[in-house]
Image (cartoon, rainbow, N blue to C red; front, side, top):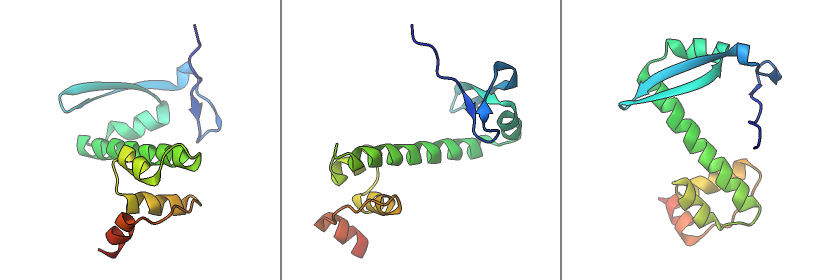
Length: 117
């Protein structure tokens, strides 16, 4: 049986010990979501409104999808169009993210028409 990956507190620059974790529960869209978070982050979230937390999750998930498909695209695993579809964004938007990450995707006629409006 594989052991769980250790948690890491990037702000503190060290692994998170179980004594430094807080349980955080939020009801989102009728579903309860419980996470173990570093104490400092849990404290910051206690006063956050549900709409704010949903926006943070949605943005974070979107950016994570984009980063993952860009890594796959950079390795040659998918075309820009397929990567954009997997990430749920347009080719032109993914191309902008690719350029920001130092990648130079070719512009298709679809991407060019999106850029020109």
